[in-house]
Every structure is written in C-alpha cells, then in structure tokens.
Image 1 (cartoon, rainbow, N blue to C red):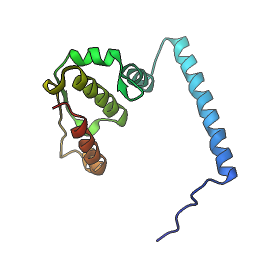
Image 2 (image 1 turned 90 degrees about the horizontal axis):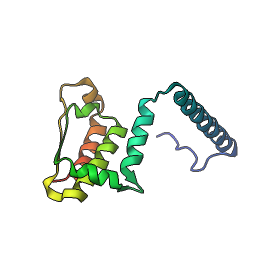
Image 3 (image 1 turned 30 degrees about the vertical axis):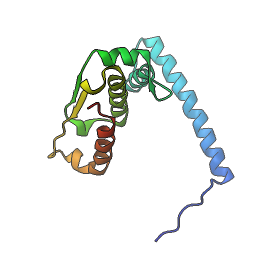
Image 4 (image 1 turned 180 degrees about the vertical axis):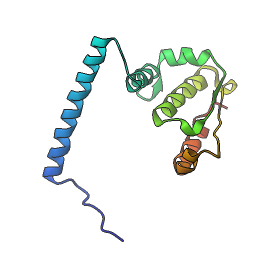
Amino acid sequence: MAALPAAALSAADEAAIGALSRVLEHAARELHVEFAQQGRVDYAYVTGAARAALTEAGLPTELALRTGLAFTHILVDEFQDTSLAQFQLLESLTAACRRAIGARCSSWAIRCSRSIASAMRRSACSSARASMASAACG
C-alpha cells in the first residue's frame, strides 16, 4: 500500500493554493463583468443564482416555499445525466415542497440503466439515489 500524503500542507503548497485561489477569484469577477457588458450569462451563473434564490443557510427561502406550493410532483427524466448542481437544486425544491405542503409532495427520478454514463457513474448514482430518497417528499 502506498504511503498517504502528509496530513498538513507544506508552506509552499499552502502559498501556491492561496495564490491560485486569488487568481481564480479575480478571473471569476472579470468573467462576470464581461458577461454583464455583453448582456449574457453562462450555465454556472444561472445555476448559482437559482441555488442562492432557493436556499439560505441550508433552509428554503421564501421564494422556494412559494415555489413549493406551486407543484406536488417532480419528475426527473434521464437522472443519470443530472449534475451535482442540478441535484442540489432538486434537493432545494423538494425541501421547499416538503415544508410547504408536506406528504402531498413526491419526487421521482428515472434513469436509463443501459446508459454508458450510468455505468461509469454507478457508485455516484447510488449515493445520489440514497440522498434523493432521504430528501424526497413522500
């Protein structure tokens, strides 16, 4: 068995990670400015904005609770293609639904077992399904 890496970062690694973090934060701000100037947004921005609108400190926002009142069922087709960000949004909606209308809310996830992506992500999907089952509203 190979030796595990050190439990703490070296001073040089910590400095490099800190510098990279600052560069990435600056690049993200510049990208946001560029998109604003062009009147555009990207998928990551929309996903982040949706997540911010639906949850605050892990709890549903007022908007999420009102959205939760608008539906009683959520159906996700091709669940194997669901990204982590999309799954987190789904968790936010089901939490809002559960708080808003309780047991009358349900969620279903459908995946294609023949999908190559599904086979490649089987372990990730099983943990997502377990989390989905615990987050589901009914």
